[in-house]
Image (cartoon, rainbow, N blue to C red; front, top):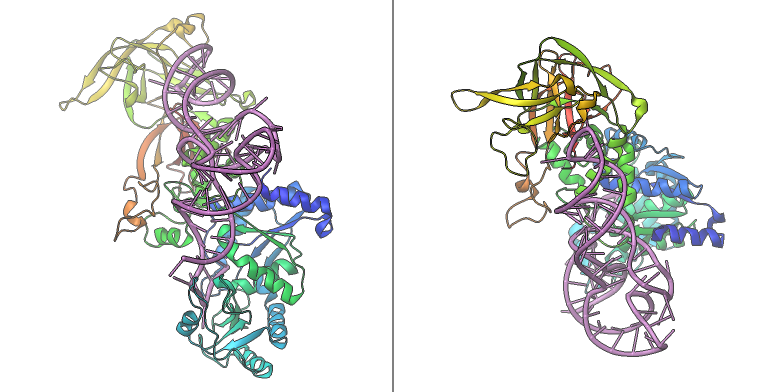
Length: 539
RNA sequence: UGUCCAAUGGUGUAACGGUAGCACUACAGUUUUUGGUACUGUCUGUCUUGGUUCGAAUCCAGGUUGGACAACCA
């Protein structure tokens, strides 16, 4: 049980909020969701589920210049893909009328005023954390003048940036956010939902807590950087005398070799360092999905990293573990040769069908027939002319088992003029066919293969981490995170796959035996299937 | 020279005044027709100095270190 659940259980026991739990996930629709958001989604929806409560989806759309419907659609899709369904769908913009009324109310009570200072003047007047700020010369306008000005701001009479509405709290708080914070700014911008209705838009601090309040949120869970906003969150709830949800902060997720800033992810997309927001190398939820992560693996990851208030950097190997853990249970096994070399069984003639297991972890997945012939493709790395003690695959004179087939012995190899191996020759032992008594003979290894005449060509996309540095943001002077981009993060090559592996198959996740987990990419065509490598098998 | 928050193995996270546990990583071993899986084992930890107490990771005080805060962003 994490510390937030402890707080909730205490509240429940005390009968606070009528012993109800209502959370919300409040994304700003200005980018795609990433794995860090997944942690928050799992937390908020998970808590609602655990305590028989509700979780809303609310778009924090108070800044029309940055937001777009493209993002609200993708956000909804990602949440649902993760396996969650919100109780209510809301938008902060739905509350603009109410928010405006509340702003007037605060003006009436002498708790807010219109400030005509420029942005620079306001910034200078705010002071620095160690020293108090100075009051605005417009701070003590009459209520009537404030009301008049604010209404005219709303009516669109003033240009952008010419005036703001500020809360009248004080200029000497050690917390900068409490020094007469801005509530409304003038923005003659088109909003993706309210259109051109508004010429003024509320700031986060004058929208978020109130939105929580309107929705009857009991526990408003957010990340640590909002800790300094909490006094203001509380102040507005108190001043407005409205339902007061409890804000609780937790540490956001950080992953090594990864960036999580929406701005920087956007940069990668815009500058075409990746194929898009859903590039399999991206830490976005849609990227992970395209990479072949299952919803269960992402959920399990979020559960495993835990919730606390201390800064953390999670090792990406934990994410990969979660992928393997789930994929091992569900991925259909198949054989594929990614770096092929011809294997010729000189004493074999004809063709026969062998039986292959679809998933040793799940007998119900059944078996499939695979063709065996004289000429096969095998993995180049499964043979070595000179082998050290640690190498226990095929060598000249050595024996190895062909999975589901026979034990073979390498006799000799063919090379081209440059010394590259062009073919490996072997003989098979007919008595060692899979299932026969002699097939149990101990050999150094079992390797995978595909029949050369039957195998189909497929495009294989291999991924490495996007960044070379554990902390891509830890840059030398004059450099940026872009300088630590891994030039080899994407490798595209052709491989040979079993002929039975088609686009019609309902399965999306595969394990290429002895190699790793792969999934079918949406770039696949009838002519050529494209596979993304999700993660390799543990070595 | 400010305020707030945090500090437990390599990485995370438990233990709520009474045996420092779990997961990942790494490394061994057993099983295995995947160098996978499963199972077993090994390694490494309470930031520091005081105090309270029979007893402190836990409570208190100081220090140190890290983070957040000075957008008309969220």
